[in-house]
Every structure is written in structure tokens, then in C-alpha cells.
Length: 502
Ligand SMILES: NC(=O)C1=CN([C@@H]2O[C@H](COP(=O)(O)OP(=O)(O)OC[C@H]3O[C@@H](n4cnc5c(N)ncnc54)[C@H](OP(=O)(O)O)[C@@H]3O)[C@@H](O)[C@H]2O)C=CC1
Ligand SMILES: O=C1O[C@H](COP(=O)(O)O)[C@@H](O)[C@H](O)[C@H]1O
Image 1 (cartoon, rainbow, N blue to C red):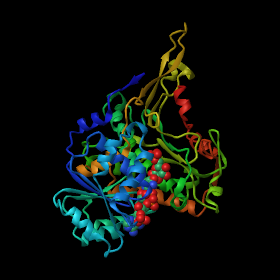
Image 2: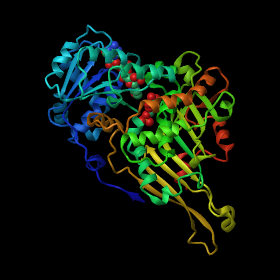
Image 3: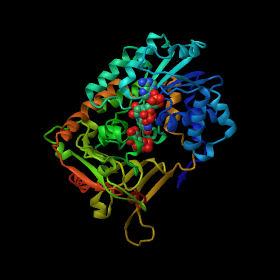
Image 4: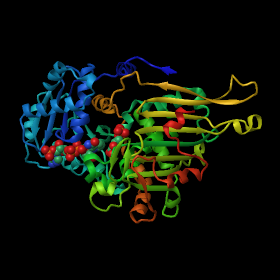
């Protein structure tokens, strides 16, 4: 079994060789769920591993009226609640909290407390400023306009946009147009937190740094690629957002299509942000359209009904919501990439709430070896890139059973296990990449819009009930219709248990 033991945070920073300048981080929506659960813990963890330069500042803003001391107390409680236990150091937390300020601002109101924010920021007018918009996207343009009219956007400023960038092509364009009135595209950092996951970045390393894998990475040797992002959780406290979104908008339009792009792209000219994004957008634009005519054949949508996650009984989606809904909590899609490399190779994407286990991975199924030599005992090999949890990879081989006197094949699995390494949360990497002005792990405007253009006909067809809404019990792997979808093209879903059994 392969394993690694160094602290990957330190290793990756050294490898990047990137300078992190002293910064001012202004978080809009600083009292919200995302700021508390992800953004503040991410900044603290980077402070803890000494990646935050001395003198940097964090300024929280929201409409809630509170003093700086009250906000620091709120932040302390969030850190105590959401940080992994091994990372809590009270003395360090005290020092981290001293970096934080709070200003009450209504981002949509030009007469709000902007002068107080300006007084803080103008102390260091040339410093890197990051405005993190952790609010509803509908107010991104208004916040940008108010920042501009109060002369807070400097050449060294950047803006980070949280998802969702729209709910369809038109609304995405509107948000992009709105923010672009005040920030250049090179100042806009659209978050897709999956790109900040080390294991997602590993897709490029595995593909392009290993000639024996690079050489077979095409439809000549690959039968299919499946990408899964399954969760045991339901909609938690976000039912309002989720019911207007659904699994395809929430996960496929962004995270899963990004992973597909990394898997399917031709080698980029370099690893610079724009070269990688050019290669990804070429994939998105080459996706074979799913239309009203074939949506029933190429997609499955479903809602969970009551069931059990482990020993825990959970209600169905409709019961949880308390009203009827036409929103899917499960989506599976068979996609084709119309490039010479991938002609006819199915890419299966699926995502689910209330699945049997949390499990995000990419599974590449290779075409079987020489049947004329080994007959049917030769099995298709698989490579699984385990995105989370139990990060790592598995690669199977047909080998001769050493205990057999005849030429009997056995399927052996080589496993790579990253569990001994502290893998930084994706927000840690992304929040500081924005400071460094490194756009490679953020989504360019043309990527967002190409992804919407492709998924939109499916969403329209689903909304018009052109396909049936299937059901699956909470705690299962999804509806039977999704098994049929992959069986039609000679495949089956690989659940993690299958892989580790080889
Ligand atoms: N929570 C999550 O897990 C995820 C969230 N996101 C995205 O991140 C963004 C924030 O989500 P989340 O934290 O969950 O949302 P919340 O509703 O928990 O928080 C919203 C925040 O925005 C502030 N806010 C609302 N209106 C204004 C305004 N006019 N001016 C200034 N601040 C305002 C709120 O504070 P106040 O009311 O005091 O003004 C609050 O701090 C959303 O776009 C969401 O889609 C993306 C991925 C995951
Ligand atoms: O963007 C989102 O992602 C999370 C899943 O993220 P993960 O890192 O835990 O895999 C999902 O729960 C949420 O609905 C969605 O908005």
C-alpha cells in the first residue's frame, strides 16, 4: 500500500513558490453560515500554519448591528464549533481574532456605513484587497457598485464570487455583466470549492505526470468514466435555496462538470490559469447537447423518500420540506464529449443527497485486455480517484494467481492512501489564491456560461416534466432507473465497496 506522511500544506506551499502579500480581506455576509462554517476556519488554519503574513486584516460586514468585540465573540464560537479538534489552539485563536474588525453595512444601500469601511481600508491604499461576496448573488452588482462609488476598488483589489452564479444562462450573464461593470475579469475570482480540493487537482497530476496513464487516456483504451458526488446529508438548513435549485444546478452544473473537464481535456499548453481554463472550456463546448428528444434516455432525476442512514431514520424530501416539490435531490446524466479523444465514450455524472454513504470519486473503467489469450476471466481494470472521504486512489490489475498451477487470472488492487496527511480544506487554498492573484482554481466567465448552456435544456425539460421524477429511499444508492441508464451502455455504477473488493 502506498502512503505519504509529510504535511501537505507545507509541501504544496513550497512547491508553488508563491508569495502571499499582506492583505485586507473584506467579507460581505460575514455573519452567515458559510462565513462561520468555512471562511473563518479556513483563514484561521492558514494563520495557524503561518501562511498569513503579519499585519494582514479581516473585516467582516453584514447588516446586523454589532460591535467588533461582539463579532469576534461570534467568530470565536464558530471556530470552536467548526474547526477540527486537533487544530484548536486558544492562544492562537486569540491572536487570530485580533486581526478581525467588523463594520455594519447594508451592501445594497449607497448611504450605508461605507465611510467606516473606507477609513479602515484607506490606511493601506496599496495593499491587496479581497472583497469576498458571501451573500445572495442577486446583490453582487449592488455591492460592487457601492464599492466603486465609494472609491474602494483599487488596482490591487479582487472580488471573490460565491456560487450560484445564476440559475440559468441568462441569470448567469446578468450577474457576470453586473460585476464586470466594476471589476475586470482578471480581478474576478468565481469560487468552485471542488477545484480547491487537493484530490481534484490530483486529476491533472495523475493524468499528465505519469506517461503510462497519459498514454492510455482516450477512448482507444477507456470504456467509460463515472463521476460521483454523493452525500448522506439532506438539505440541512438550506431548504429554501435547495428547493429552488435541485441537484443538477447545485452540483452538476458546477462541481461535476468541472471534474469532467479536468478528466476530458486535452493537455493544456501549460499549467497557468488561462491555459488550463482554455482546455476546460474546450471540453464544455464539445459536450454533445442533451435535447428534449433524448433527455429521457440520457438523464435520470429523483427525490428521496423516507429511509435510514445507518441506524438513523430520516423523513423523505417532501415531508422534510412540508410541501409538494418538483425538485430533484438526485441527478444522473450520461454525457458525451465530441472530441477525437472521446468519441463514443460515456461520461456518467451522478449526485445525490441522502445517499447510502458520503462518497465523491472518479472511476475510470478501461477496456478489457486480450480475451483471445485469457478468455472471459480477464476483467476490466479500474482506476478510482477518491476525492473524499478516504482520499487516495485505487488501481486494479489482472495478475496471474501465484497460488494456481494453471494460468488463472486474479484481480489485484494497488491503493494509494492520503489519510495520514492533513489535507487542507479547499477554502484554505482558494481564499489565499485570491490574495495571491492566482486565478487557476477559479472559474472563468466563459466556463460558467458554457456549463449553463449545456445543462439548461435538461433543466427546462425536467421543469416541464418531460421525464419522470423517480424516487429512492434515503440511505440507498439511488433509483433503479440510474442503474438502467449505465447498463444500456454496458456499465454499472461502482460503489466504493466494489472497488476495494477489487
Ligand atoms: N452555506 C453554505 O454551505 C454555502 C453557501 N454558498 C453561497 O454562499 C452565499 C452565502 O451563503 P450563506 O452563508 O449560507 O447564507 P446566509 O443566509 O447564512 O448568510 C447571508 C449573509 O449575508 C448577509 N447579508 C444579507 N443581505 C445583506 C445585505 N443587503 N448587505 C450585507 N450583507 C447582507 C447576512 O447578514 P445580515 O442579515 O446581518 O445582513 C449574512 O451574513 C450564498 O450565495 C450561498 O449560495 C455556497 C456554497 C455553500
Ligand atoms: O456546493 C455544494 O457542495 C456541498 C458539498 O460539498 P462537499 O465539499 O461536502 O462535497 C453540497 O452539500 C451543497 O449542497 C452544495 O451547494
